[in-house]
Amino acid sequence: MAALAPALAAAAGRLQNESCSSTAGAGRQVQSWKIKAERAKKVEFIRTAEKLKAQLANIEKDKTGHLYNRKSDSRVEYRLLEELEHSMTVSRKMEKAKILQQLSKIQNNVKKLQQQLKDVKPTPEFVDKIKEMMEEIENAINAFKEEQRQIYEQLLKEEKAVINELSLFERKVELWALGSSTAEKVWKLPSARVTVDKTLENHLPEEVIEFEKFLQRTGGRQGGWDDYDHQHFLKIRTKYRGRLSYMDEALEYLSGRTKEDIEQHDKWYQEYVILHERKKESIKKWKEKQQQEKERNLKEKEKLEKMLKERWLQHEEAQKQKAEEETKRKHAAVEVWKKQKVVAFAIDQASQLKLEDKEKKQQKESQSHVKLVLERNTLQKKVKEELEKLENEKKEEAEKEGRKKIAAEEISKFQEHDLHKLELRVLQKHTKEIEKHEKEKRLAKLREKVEVRVTRDRSRLNRPSKGWEERSQEMAPAAAEPLLHVSQRAVPAWRGGS
Image (cartoon, rainbow, N blue to C red; front, side, top):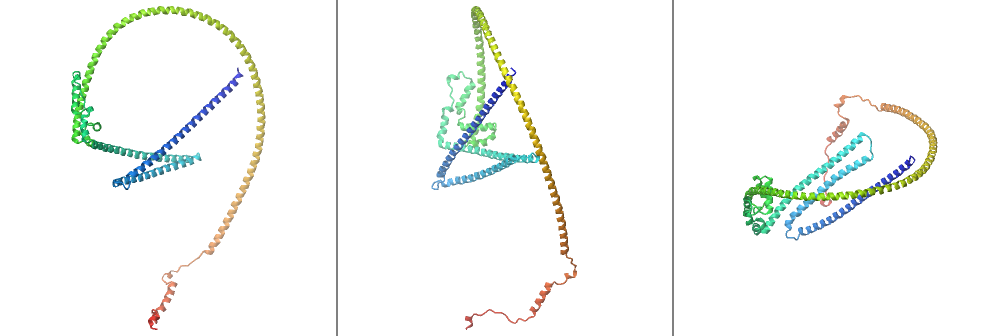
């Protein structure tokens, strides 16, 4: 058995490697499937984007054809829309350029960080630099997100205000279209009135009847108003918790109603709430009364059930006695069958034990044979491994000696090279010093030749310069000479008469 252990361990290792390789292959398949799914999603997204872009272009073309046509009668009115659209497109383009500039700046910073991370240096300065760059990128991204969030919040507020205005305009248009006839029909709608059957009045509480009559009299559960106006009225009233300060906002939302209509509807609603609460209380009392009657009926029912249960128990007892007798008879038959089964099982076990003894003997013989073969193989392997080990050790020793010789030769070469370099440096230094000394000598000789010594004469300040003396000498004789001839203009020949 000891010889079989290594073989079993090797087989277990192979199975484990196969399982690992199979799991790795499955992981690669899943990853490739995910990549394919992502690519398919991207392709589908690009297709839908192109379709939407084409639809948008067609819609823009139709719009410009209908609205901004020069031959159209309403060209003057649509000119305002055209100017507004132009200003909006310009602002969108500017905003787009600004966003692209911010994103390109962030992208450049990220690329710089990636370039820095390619050449990592284990120094604190490098770590601080990377940290500063990451903080700068993070701050830029957070600032961009915050700016976009504020823009989207502002756009949502504007969208909400536009939707409210559009709903008000739609409501006005509907009222203009319907006219006064539909306003009268609202009061005649069957849903606006709640009818009470006269036969039920005798069975209902007074508060319920009073509430239903109030609804009939005042135009239903919305007080004669339509659902749109009544819901807006309730929303504004609950917002201000019933205070009169809600009137201004109610007038804004309910453009078709006056202040008197809203005050009257508010009074109706207060009365409606009071009557509704009374109705709830009366229904609650009626339910309690019904519950009491129900409990009394349940008690009577429980008495009847007890009587029936006693009779049923007597019947069950009789049935139980019969069943016990039947089980006893069956139990005796089962005991006989079990004894027969035990005898047959003992015979089978004896024959099976004989077969197992034979099989064990055969297994022992085969195991002893396998054991001998394995021991012989292991001895052969050990001898082979020891021989290989000795050969490897000899090779390593020879390689070590060779490396030592090469290292000694190289060291001596390096030492000679270093000595030669030192000698060259000393000579260069000595020559430089000699050149410097000679240069200083030459400069001293030049300074002696160029140096000028001048004596000062303070009386020269009051004397005229040579240039001034020469000029005064030139000017003096020119002034003494008499004016002998005055130059005149020449006379042409045709005027002279010759």
